[in-house]
Image (cartoon, rainbow, N blue to C red):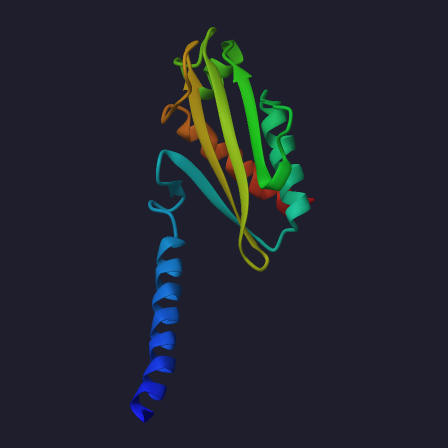
Length: 154
């Protein structure tokens, strides 16, 4: 019976250790130093309050011509929409002309105390369904850099 009493705590300890390992492995860093798997982008922001980062997200994207969709901003998820125009073509590229709609899904996640990560996925539509667009990646990186700089200042 003493071997059974010693076996159960060891089994529980090993099981919880395995669960912790799987959780940490699943929450590891994104690939590519700022590129999120699935076509998105991310930027780490340290030592800035969540409120300041949320204000920076809204300010930067709205200043770039995006409209904040109703219901956005809850629980760190923001949805922005922008119609293609000549100014958009200058900023994003030739593909972003009239008739094209760009949607930005931005989410804010606290990864550890005092450290947040902002994720941005750009999706494009030509009147149909939205699909992930690698075309605006350069502009997306610029927007996330501006969010980081503004959050540090606020």
